[in-house]
Length: 300
Image (tube, rainbow, N blue to C red; front, side, top):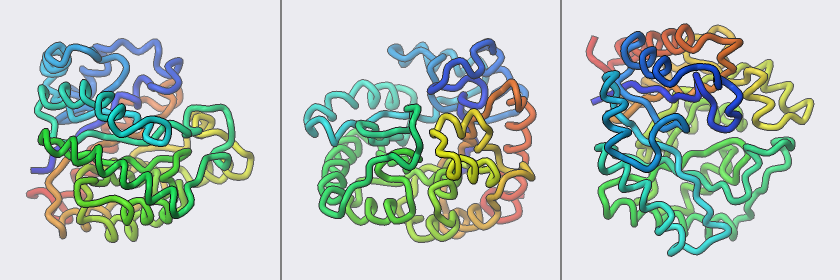
């Protein structure tokens, strides 16, 4: 069954915590759950991090489920055994909250949080990608043994950013490794979202509905902005925003054709002082539900 969720970074950013620092946690949850009507929400730095039951109880007060949360992999720096130990508390939190997927991304050499141009990111050669993929597959199999799918998040500033990276990574991993398809990061990384989604839909287990403002993306590339410069500058937005470049109708049609039954999550970080999260997230959810009905993804 399709469920629609959001991410608290629309209200309070995790990487630049000055963005939305003045927004009370209760307001985030009230707007997301009780005013907008999302089914669930992903992890954020405001939620209880070390008490899975406190997390469940907090979100439940606002009618929200815990969807999943980001886990930073460091497989290019640490051993697989070390990374299994590192991910276990995260898996325990997910299992307690009934989650089905663990969002993971390699961050050992990422520039996504650094004040340097996105163009300075590390790139793996063919042999490096094969070795990396084999290690991710070991972690994914470890997660699968506990009933959790590892969904790898291709992300700007990391070793899996471009459509070519995604293709190489998916070829280097095995059946245990699933994909978190992020429309915004796909477009930002130079891919056509529909083409990439169709190619890998058989292993997609999580979907991030992020939109991109092409005018800001062009400045990021031309002026050598960092990833967070782009975020602060408004490169991301929600489905339905006329400033965004991504048409979500073909993407949800692909999901419908392939009987996708997971979460569709609006993960669109913006400066809440510039773009009201309540208004933008409402626009995004209404747009996605309308398209989902039109494509047959959900009943009309």
